[in-house]
Image (cartoon, rainbow, N blue to C red; front, side, top):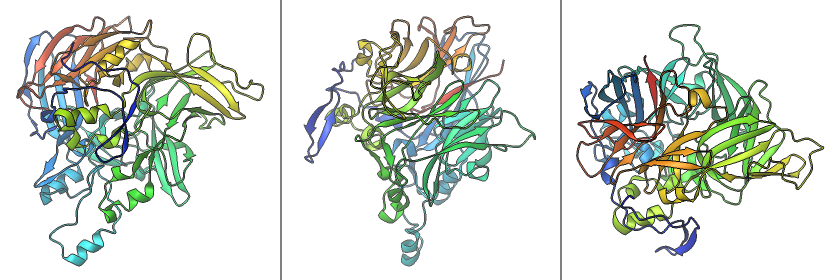
Length: 556
């Protein structure tokens, strides 16, 4: 077992903090090691460098493992406040003939260039508000407080594809097209030039034919709406980007000035599923943030008095289901999979019962040590894989107050009103997952099993503020396999299928492993997805910060 103390059962207790506020303690863990060094600034490595191979990298792997995440946390004498604020650093592990080269490059965003030119934080980020330019006179600085916040184009969350091209994305209205071979930025693309949205998620879903779905908010005088976006699969001209994108439908926010925050959404064969959760955004606070010297994150809050709402949108017609599927308040960042079976829609996701985690991931917390670090961890709710089963054929004849679900799941759905069904979940794990701090960053064999019944998913265990183990979950029996080594912190696992794979787990898992305990000892880990045993690692002779999301670009 890892040296980190084992988790206790996840029943939150109320405890008074030093400020006499009542806060939840979800665990009672002590002795967490300091991880400050894995959230530190690094220099980029734009030219490929060789790695040291330990073990073996399968010869059939040909392509690039691409990663995205923050890489610079200070500009001049200014420091960013939140983990999500760091300047985007793009990574490439190029694999060919069992050898691996590494390169990285800071995204050439307008935010990065403005910060570099001014040698200070010139563009506000999620958790950091920029101060007026000290070179301006007093009156100019005073007036600048009344300017609307400029949207950052610091796309540090993920790599995504549209029409066969690679983009890096965050949650604003700007993406950057990137050359996956060189990591050079080739074009800045603004969603609002094509459709009426003020941003889009960094987690679109793609059909086998290349058609891509996403979600984005729009803010008008009538209030906030959630928009389902569809992007065509192919280009008509070589240099086009999002031409042909359409808004499939708009869903008004229940509270016009306080829409829900969402990081992603689910998709089945026929439906897009939007989960309206009780993490809310106070638009008035966000718009007036600069005047109040408050960041965007100050406008986020958790309202546990609200239920979670599942909205079903038919992908072909754009029609929103009149039935609202409700659940108790939950927080979800990443869905695992969704599919339809025998008149039911199955949605699997990583979820927790508390939605205050976002504002706790500031850099000050990540860099704490000792009891202060333990306190941060213990007041964060863990996420666990859960299944909701929604009956699709609800009409005026559907009975009330009876469980409508099949007996093969412990998830329930009960009709409670004319157009309301209240749902409870089934746990997709056994008690042993509690020992690993729950799970996040879920991944499946997406290309073949997304929107279809599946058996395996992969993720990170969280016995720390970042992932500290890799987990393979088998839904047949809810068994799990684990890869872990003390002092090593794995990133999101990505599944790469073997050529001519006949079984769902024929292939490898790739993950970038970070350690704060030794300088220049980051490595790319390759596991056999079936056995979850290590095949090899490619040790990188430079430091890499802990990042967010990635993808594999096969070239063979």
